[in-house]
Length: 72
Length: 240
Image (cartoon, rainbow over all chains, first blue to last red; front, side, top):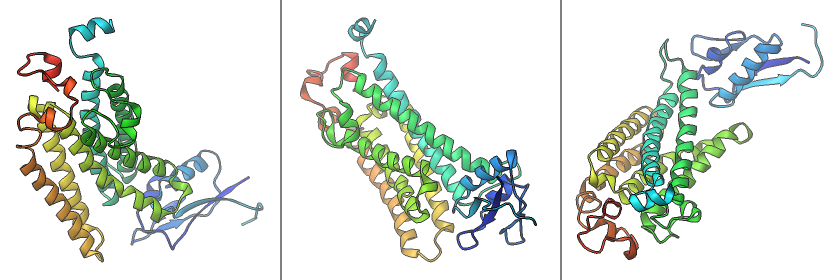
């Protein structure tokens, strides 16, 4: 079972909390908006991803279960 | 033990309820300041945003814990007839009903804010934020409750100093929030600033004749049976 991190660009207001809490997957562009590495997360990184999603002030960071294991 | 204490003077609960009330005021003030710092996106290399955010959360929860202790001990203290219902439903009790009721309103508002924040993931952002704004109403109501029921404002300098210090912090926080927030809502910002100013002015005009004036215990609605007969030197009664 793997999970993937993504951002809802409509609700994101560039608070940048996700980049602080999940530097493994999130970096910020020059305007402070997140650039997300969509490599699947698991284990400790998944736990960090969940915390980062909970901390997002506008609920814009999503951690979703991958429906089918895909090859990328 | 309890009976000895009761005979000797104020119960332990009486001291605990006063101190937890004062600490709760301090913690709520810190929580508001941190909340504003959070929404202003304040951060330094030593204080990243998530530190401010989790500190805001934890200080707020600690404040709620102190409020619960404050309420329970005021109910347990047998001197003032305060029931658990008076502490949650405003204006129902017999002991300083109006001023105790303000405390109940403030607690109810903060309870709503706490519960919605704990369930934040399960509700929409707009409704969570609308409820979170109730904090700005709960704080002045709590301060008035402290002035109206707390006898320490008159008895000594410490609670007055704490209250004025906290008021200064909250007014500064509102100012900081209003200056940079809601650029498209000038009327709201003006109203928030006006509210903070009017509240401060009201305290300045009301305190000398109100809680700092004479016979506040009687005027604030203390049951006659609990009032000292005249110029009593009974420590328990005269401190209230």
